Length: 311
Image 1 (spheres, rainbow, N blue to C red):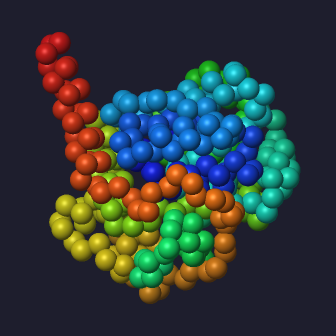
Image 2 (cartoon, rainbow, N blue to C red):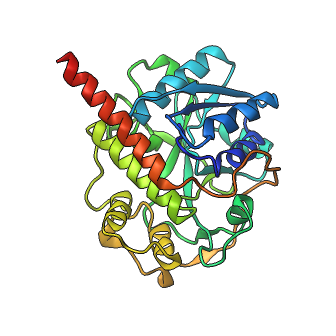
Image 3 (cartoon, helix red, strand yellow):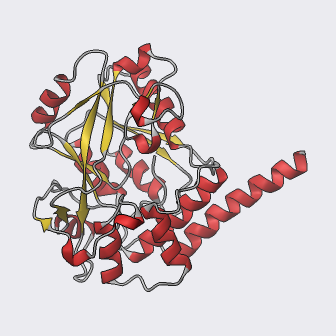
């Protein structure tokens, strides 16, 4: 499920399609040209299923679970890997990924390690590909997360739903990780997820502001010490989003605020993940956050006004 990712969506699709048979993508009300880029890619005969999803609330788990079930019903897929637009499959080869997924036991789902990558914000990159190729991996994840690999077992468990952030498959909607059935962990050297949470100051502002609005609309606000909430607080407080601040937030992404480390104490290592791919439709920079945020506010206000008039 993507929203306002025009600066990233083309390399994201081209990279991940090097390893996957197809991608089913929900465009969640983008206004920055993301959907147009996806349509251009589909016109190249890229194996894409495009879904228009304009609901203002952030109901990611329900929407991605429904789409996974649709993919299993419509195709011969054995696995569905829910990816955000800042997540890239990291694997030596398509065959290595295929072998790793085939090793997941029957009637189980899998887990891929979630690895944090941090670009060099102090050295402007020529384009998004250069920025991603220059990103370095956090040497050790202080808060270990995974992303789910959904198997066809989902079709035999009608109550199962993807859990918060698509990090696991829960037994029921809203189910906790500790109550989820066992998952098979894939070894990181065979396949993992490269996660690049921050690309620029404009992208960060648009990301945390629109997600905050959508989560409030869905009644699922962030915890006060969540990394996304901390970034949102920094934006609201008018803190300068310079290279040092972006690095501080990126190296501590997914870590509760009370556990943050100074960026100088976080080791980063070179571990490239991005495949070479042409850029034909990508704009030179992320969209200005103001129109993106205003569009999100307008959708919510229109929906609220409609609900009041009906009441």
